[in-house]
Image (tube, rainbow, N blue to C red; front, side):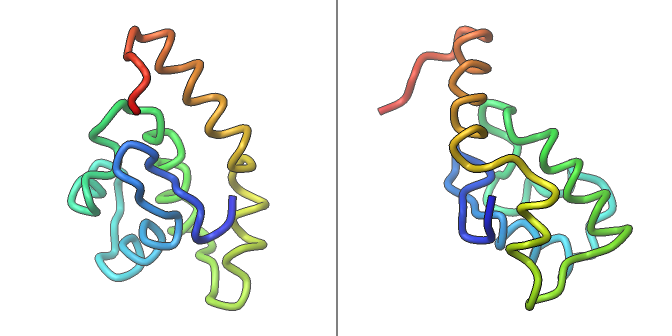
Amino acid sequence: MEADDELCLCFHISCRKVLNYIRIHRIQVASQLHDCGGAGTGCGWCRKQLERLTTLCGESPPTAENVDAWLREHTPNKDQYAKGRAVYRESIGDPPRS
């Protein structure tokens, strides 16, 4: 994924917004991200990525200059991510949204 790709597909929250929220609010655990536009409170698919980004930002956060490269290294590509979510939602019996 890249910075402007959606991480929380339910609420259309971008990776950039999540990373900025983690940095500005000094988030230590992913559950604190619910105040970031509701990230992680919809279908639940993004929770693992939110946890991963929270941990990675604590260890070696991206800079403004390398955020896209950093995200490509640490996240799946956006098409694979969206396909994985579709399979996940089907497996939990969550019908597709229009």
